[in-house]
Image (tube, rainbow, N blue to C red):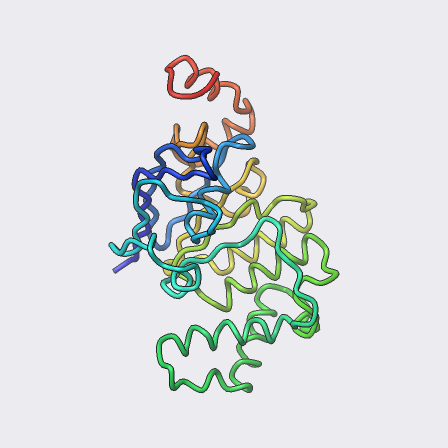
Length: 261
């Protein structure tokens, strides 16, 4: 049975400032959803709240993964349950190689399930990592480089996708993965996500622009405005936003009294 991620009437603050004002969304494994909207409408806030960022306070609502409310769980516990966040601005960690980082992450998950687990054998890990690198068209020598240290924007995003391919979560949130990428880098990164997508992965693509959706095809598109989802539809909704921008959203919901003018 496919897993289900449900966000129910979620309200989130930073300090006293409300950023999310009642977000509801349901994503099943195998589905690809796109979340679009202007800057400052709460898209990245939703991503951080899903993963339990301590700076974002959930004041009401629920985040359910297969019926379990994850709000009381730490970020690593949510990760082990099957949530993954690809950052808009991945952090560099000098001194820690990509391979060591990934092997440590795998072993942490295994030992959480079985404290006596001795970790993935090195030969098995190397074979698996080599296969993932080849699938994503990432040069093998990247495995020995320090994580994101000296990487270009496109390289950092490819390593985020590599983490996704290695950890195999139930749900992946891609927070503006297209940010700062040229067309060639975008195509490579998006093709990597597309190669991983399938019936065992639900994807939420957070983006301003339709261009990444030329490669990662969503079945569902949602528009966030003033901290809530105000429009939902199919892929044609993203095309309309590309052609007309967000002014019609502002006008529609200002007129309805549900968003700021």
